[in-house]
Amino acid sequence: MSNKQYEQAIFAGGCFWCMVKPFDQWPGVKEVVSGYTGGHKPNPTYEEVCSETTGHYEAVRITFDPEVISYEEILKIYWQQIDPTDPGGQFFDRGQSYQTAIFYLNEEQKEKAEQSKRELEESGKFSKPIVTKILPASEFYEAEEYHQHYYRKNPLHYNRYFIGSGRADFIKRHWGEQHEK
Image 1 (cartoon, helix red, strand yellow):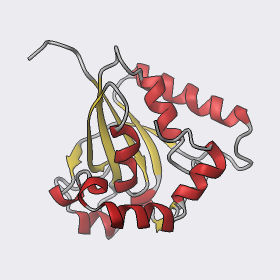
Image 2 (cartoon, one colour; image 1 turned 180 degrees about the horizontal axis):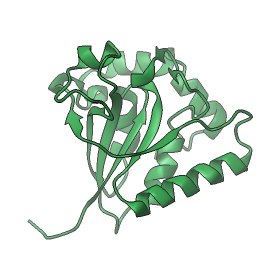
Image 3 (tube, helix red, strand yellow; image 1 turned 180 degrees about the vertical axis):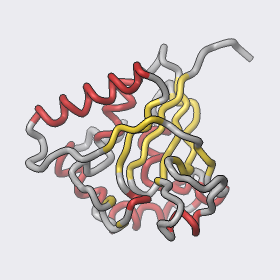
Image 4 (cartoon, one colour; image 1 turned 135 degrees about the vertical axis):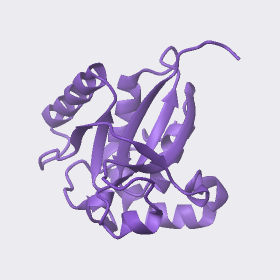
């Protein structure tokens, strides 16, 4: 085992099933975990989070090697997976637990996240305001095992959901094929 220093990033982008695969495929990404963050109840379950009573977001925690892939590159991948103009959730999934947010782990991440949001706003890519929140990270609770790497465990259902929710079309319309490596 090496003493290599890995970093982490935490993002909410709607259904966490759709937020794992885009990061999983990049060199330097060591692990992507589905979970819950930003709420007030310790160890929430999926059902509790979906009930909108815990304050949690569905999120992913990405562990990466900054010598291979930078936080700025991770942010770029993130923006290309979401509709950053939707304050009510993402695609078919509505409610606070499906809203978008970048959870920063330190001041450097906060600054980089704010800069990337400014650049996206200034790019003119979207006609509506960018509403994705940038929030301090709080406790991250891993989701139940059946949610981890859902796209691998249930590829047919995942693909139907990814397309049927409108996410695939939105990404293609706004980013072309750049969303996948």
